[in-house]
Structure formats: C-alpha cells, structure tokens
Amino acid sequence: MTNGHQLINYIRAVAAIAFRCRAVRCYSSNNSHFYQAVALQHWLCVFALFLLPLPVCCLYFECESKTDSMAKKEQEESMVAVVAAVTPAVPLGYRQLGTQVAGHTFEASNAAAVGLLQDVGGSEEGRSEGRVFKPLGKPECGLREIQFYESLAAAKSTIAAAVGDVGKAENAADNDLALLAALAEHVPRYYGQRKLVVNQREHTFLQLEDLTHGMAKPCVMDVKIGKRTWDPLSSPHKRAIEQQKYVMCKQNLGLCLPGFQVYQQEQPSGKTILIRHGRDYGKSLNVEGFHQALALFFNVQPSYANVRQLLREVLRQLRGIHSWFKRQRLLHFYASSLLICYDFDRLSNPSSQQNGYHHEPPATPAIKPPDQWIRVRCIDFAHIFPAADAQPDENYMFGLQSLIDIVESMLQR
Ligand SMILES: Nc1ncnc2c1ncn2[C@@H]1O[C@H](COP(=O)(O)OP(=O)(O)OP(=O)(O)O)[C@@H](O)[C@H]1O
Ligand SMILES: O=P(O)(O)O[C@@H]1[C@H](O)[C@H](O)[C@@H](OP(=O)(O)O)[C@H](OP(=O)(O)O)[C@H]1O
Image (cartoon, rainbow, N blue to C red; front, side):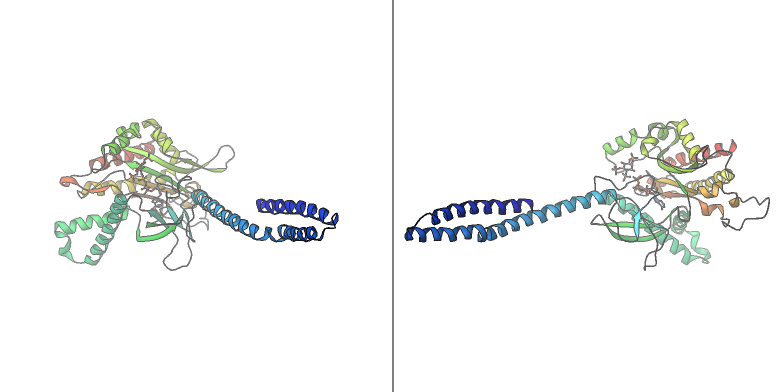
C-alpha cells in the first residue's frame, strides 16, 4: 500500500509540473494556434494529472494486492507451521498428551512429527474421557502394533465366547489364545483406530486406555526392557545405533530409561513441584544412577505414608507380567516398555492407606484400591515378533527380573 501511494504522488507531481509550465506559456502568448496547441496540452496534462493515475494504479494495486495476498498467505502458512509445531493444530476435543514422558513427540521444526493426543472428554458420540491416541508412526511399526492389539482383542472375545466350554482349552491353539487373552490384562485397553487431522495432515491413531486416567498428580515412568532393543529385521545401522545408547544400563540391567515425570514436595517450602527427565538424562545413567532415578521416581522417603504400599503394588503387577512371560513361547518383544504410573496425591494422603484408620475415616477423598492409583502396563509393540523356534523371550525376562530386583531391594531397606 505504501508503494501504491508513492506511485500516485509521483505521477501527480510530474503531471502538476507539466500543467504549470503549459499554463504559464498559455497566458503569456496571444497566438491562437499556439493557444489551441497549448489547450490540447493542457487537457493532456489534466488527463495525466487525474485520469492516467487511475488505470496505472489499478494495475499496480492489483499486482500489489496479489503479491500482498500471496505474501500474506505464505506468511500465514508459515505461521500455521510454526504455531502448529509449537502448539499443534489438533481437532476440537483433543490435546497433546501432557503426561507423555518418552517416545515420538511433536517437534517445533517439523509439523509432520506427531506425538500422543488425549481426549478432553465430552458427550460427542464415539468420544469418551480417559483415552490416549497413539499415532502409528513408521508404516511397518504401525502395522505390527495394530496387529498386536487386534490379535489380543480377537483372542479375548474368542475366549470370552468359549467360557463354560470345558473341552475348549485342551488343545494347543486354544492355549495360545488363552495366553494372548491373559496378556490383555497387562496392556492398555484397546478401542480400535481413529483417523484425525493434525497440522493439516490426516494420521491414523490407536485409541488406548489412558493409564493415568483418574490420577490427580500422575507420576509416570517409561522403562524400556531388554539388552537388545533392535528387532530381527533391523538394518546393521539401526542395530549399531541401538547398541550405542544407554549402554551402561542396558548391558548390566537389560533396562533403560527414556523418560519420567514425578511430583515431589520441595523442602523446606513444602510446595509440590513436578520434575521431568528425558532421554538425555536416561542415557547418562550408570547402574547406581538407575537405582537413584527409581528411588526418586517412587518418592522413597519416610515422610510418605504409602510408599511401601506403592512398592508392593508395583511389585505385584511386575510379577504378574513376569509370570506371563514365563508361560509364553509365542512372542518376542523388542524395544518395548513398561509404563509405571501412580498418583502422587495418594502417596502423600493418609486417607488412602489400606491398613485401617487410627481415628474416624475422613469423608473425602474416597479410598481407592491400590490398582486404581498404581498401574504398571506393557506398552509400545512396534517391534513385536513371533518367537523363533518357540523360545521364551529371555531378553525381556532378564530386564524385567532386574526391575523386580531393584524394587524388591527398595522394599527391604
Ligand atoms: N496407554 C497410555 N496411557 C498413558 N500414557 C501413554 C500410553 N501409551 C503411551 N503413553 C505415553 O506415551 C509415551 C510414548 O509411548 P510409546 O512408547 O508407545 O511411543 P513410541 O513413539 O512408539 O515410543 P518409541 O519412540 O520408544 O518407539 C510413553 O512414554 C507414555 O508417556
Ligand atoms: O531412545 P531414543 O534415543 O529416543 O531412540 C529412539 C528409540 O530407540 C525408539 O524406540 C526408536 O523408534 P522405533 O521404535 O520406531 O524404531 C527411535 O527411532 P527413530 O528415530 O528411527 O524413530 C529412536 O530414535
């Protein structure tokens, strides 16, 4: 616009000078031919002064407004890209999963990178609070994860339909189905797939139970299980990368720590703070550091009444998963994690103790059984493979046993 005004003013200035020169010469001459010629020039100057700018400027403005709108559009698009990456453009009723502690996330510089979403609740059909939405990611990984969840769902419904049929579980095939159905108890509930548009692109998501649902202050830890975190189809390059990461923890414990968040009471202020650690922290840990990170995560200190209850319940759920792995010869889990979640408010709130009250039981908050505020589940099945030669998954069991040992040692302190 500024350039447009400058152009008009320029044309007007040139025309005004020409007009003044003609007018002076007109009044100073008596020659009629000359007068007519000057009159013609006079009208030409009027034309130059008032009319010529119009079409020129219209053309100019058209160009300018086109450039303007294109630039504006480009600017808007880049703004969308930046804003989308910083605050991703997600459908109404969804938001970034605030408690995501590891895995693929939204990236400030890449609008195509998508992390987990969560449902903010509401009454629309097909939506309900308490779900997370995991993007499928790389095609081969997404396909394996879908197949895993679908096969578990199919096994569950087949077994449920067969309940009461005594002879059913006798043959090997049904034992496999029963095993798969039993695994469902240790993984987030699965609600099928959903397509959602994020940052102007459509993505397919798995709808899963939010393991932190109902927790006021969710403490969340992602522990990746196994010394070996590359699958049988991995390239030598991928294999080398995986071998070089989290070396001390992986090789000694068969565990690594890609991320966690924990609430703590800051001393001496007594203020509750949230601490978050990501993969870089995890990669810096040795065995001792790993133990300390777990102690930090479980808030192992005498001031919390329910720490022992927390450790016992985590141990109970870990042993349940271990017992499943001891029985199965179906699957091998590579680069899979255990997600450990608990509610900090229950840890510090005496009303949630299970061992009875010294005085009158308080009216609120309601006592929740430990498995309602403490959840340990297997997650991330992007690299799950059929067990070669029906061998047990020693790689996973080694890591899981280390974790059980560490939690047991905390209880014995
Ligand atoms: N069912 C769930 N409920 C709550 N949080 C979840 C759930 N599933 C995943 N998360 C959160 O998302 C994070 C990443 O999950 P997951 O490991 O499945 O993703 P990923 O991108 O496949 O990870 P990776 O990069 O290790 O392959 C977890 O660490 C956890 O914080
Ligand atoms: O622990 P880190 O350092 O975060 O490393 C990531 C981790 O190993 C993921 O499991 C892997 O995703 P996949 O399981 O999908 O292979 C990802 O690979 P990627 O970068 O190729 O996605 C790695 O970057």
